Length: 277
Length: 277
Picture (cartoon, rainbow over the protein chains, first blue to last red):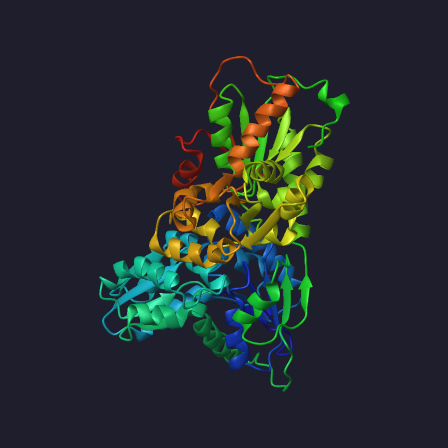
């Protein structure tokens, strides 16, 4: 996390928390934040006009990350959360650079820290998009926390479309999950990090495929807990009791977006605003 | 097809044919064009930084279509081919408007015409992306050709990622195909239009699922035949014998692009140039 203390001094608890992702997957982070911090005003941006990021190059992801951050700064956030694992893995420095000293938290560091804490045997599996896994960022982060840990990674590019299409417990999804995960399981992992905010939607099915002995770490949940810790430490938690619905901004409103958004957000979709990046 | 005769007069056979698609799927059109018209210089643009288009709104697809056309005009084409079914279905008028009077051909009209010609019982199935199917453009085009034909459509959004990930003959792909296609088959179709340039990659598997009695129409092949007919009619076929490799332009170079591109193009990948849109 990058925190500029001089700038932090002027931040106020009543300012919103801004969250962004390449598309709708990051709504799983909004969902966890609402459960944990119901007083906070949440503003979410999903770059649905350019989704997905996970299949694209680092160069393009970094450009998009800078544009997304600049968009959210207009809302005067007290904190920016990178709900996109691909951005967390390949462009967190870009977000920190653009964020004018506001605290920035990414799903990757939070998920890594929780996995390092939870593993007993020291063998951790990480799954994510092509871009996230190719960046090796989860492995590097976990090794930095504890060099004795062994990390095994696997890109699972079909999980995003399967989750978005609601193939949540379909036989085809199980077959594809077996294809992807058997290789990781052969390394006797006891912890599996869901390194993509879409994957929590598939958690029950994945749990069935890997078995109950493997603990599944949800990065969305991990980052929500980290947000609570950091805001509390900086006395930036909002104390006023209100229950704002989250504000949702998107760069495109695709077909059937309402059903898809609600699947990830877990509540009825509030007002959605179309913005340009 | 829109042809401005005044502008057509200045077109020359040695000018290139420009083709564009949201990503790499349109390379199946390049492949068919190379087989049919080996003398032609082909310039392909795949908007890999913003792929896919098929899950996005009409508004966004129309904006992208205009930008893609303007990019290709710089190469002085004698014809522009819209290899993207989503653009053909929802934004062909935008391409025609931007193309400065050059002939424009889209996969949708060519595929529709071929299906109308091939069906015997008059029941035609059409599959494509969410955006293509929601537009109803295939049905409208086929009804315009022959109002007695019955068209049954089904969006198959998982076929694009399955094709891109090489899940070409996987059991999971067959299960998903059965999910999508049983409904169409219940209408006793005898012809099935592949309304997405990714789908020809899955043709053998789809043929197995629907059975041999249903004829599969490949829009990529249909548009290549239409290009030959129109260029010949306008005396714009290139007569010089050369065998240029196609020129491939992209807006992003993702991980493992070489393997994926070659799967669709069917030959070793030529020079690829990164461009900005």
